[in-house]
Image 1 (cartoon, rainbow, N blue to C red):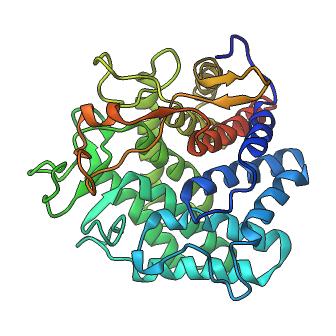
Image 2: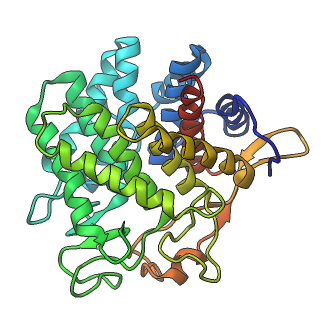
Amino acid sequence: MLTEYLPHSAEIIADCMMARHGLLNKKWSYDYGVVWRGMEMLYALTGNRTYLDYIHDALDGMVAADGSIAGYSREACNLDYLNNGRQLVFLYQQTGEEKYKKAAALLRAQLDAQPRTSDGGFWHKQIYPGQMWLDGQHMAIPFYLQYAAAFGPDEAAQRDAAKQLILAYRHTLNPETGLPCHGWDEMRQQIWADPATGRSAHAWGRAVGWYMVALADSLELLPEDTDGYAEILHIFRTLSQKLLSIREDGVWLQVLDCPGRTGNYPESSASCLICYALLKGARLGWLPKETGVEAQSSFEAIQRHFIGRMKSGEYFVGKCCQGAGLGGSTGRDGSFDYYISENVISHDLKATGAFIQAACEEQVYRTL
C-alpha cells in the first residue's frame, strides 16, 4: 500500500479502473452506479469529457429509445435498482436525450408502488417484507430527491424522502453504541432480528457508510424548509461526531461496534463512503472546519491502508468486503462472525467508486 500521499488520485484510480473493467454495461447493478457517480464528479471537477463519455457510452446501450432498461425489473421492488437513476437524470440534463428522462421516470414510478412498513418506510425489496436496510437509503433517496429537483417541484416527494431517512435511523439506532445497525424487521421474524427491537445485531461499516452518503447527498438536494430537514441535519452531525471518535489509524472497521475483536479489520468501502460524507459536510458548512481537517487525515490514511500498485503500474483499491446482507441465504444472520467471514477482495467496483467520490471531495476541499 502507499507510503506517501498520492495527488490526483481520483483520476488515477478512475483511469486504471476503466482500463481494467472497460465499459460497465453488462447488467443493471447498483455498484455500476457507484462508479458512474464518481465519474460524474470527476467530470465536474476536471471538465474532461472522457468521464462523461464513459457514463454515456455504458448507459446508451442499456437504455432503449422508449426508456426501457435492460436487466431492470420493476416487479422486484428492489431499492438497489434505483441507484443508477441518478446518472439517468444527469445524462438527460447533459444530452437532452428523451430516452434517459423516460428511463428515470420508469425508476421513479417504482417508488409510487414500493411496499411500505406500517409507518411508511420503504421495504428494501419485495422479497424482504417489512424490512428497512440502511443500504436502501443510499440506493433510493438521493435519486428520489434528484428526480424531484429536476422534474418537479414535488414537495410531497421531498417530505417522503426526508421521512425515509428519519425512519431508517429511528428503527436501526442502537442507543447503547450510538450507531445504526444494518437493518430492521418490523415483523421480528428474521433470524437476524432482535425479538424486542427488530434490529440486526451490529453496525456493519459499509451499511453505515451508505447511510452517511445518503444523508450528505440528500441534505444537498432537500430545501431547508422541508419537514424533517432539521432532524436529518441533526442526525448527520451526531453520526459524524460518533464516527470520528471510533476511527482506528484514521479509517473504519468492517464491524464498527466491535473494536478490538479478533478478526475485525479496516475496510475500504466503508472508510471511503464515510470519508466522502464528512468531507462534503465540512465543505458545505454542515460540519465544523475541524471535521474537514480530520476527514482529510482520514483520506490520507485511506490511501495508506487501501491503495496498492501492481508491478504493471496499475493502481487499485484493496481490502474491500465483497458483499454482505441479511437473511436470504444460509449464514447471513447479522452476527459478527458472519460479517468477518465474507470474502475480502481488491478491484471491487463499490470500493473503487466510493474512493473516486471521496478523492474528488478531498481534492475540492484542499482548494478551500
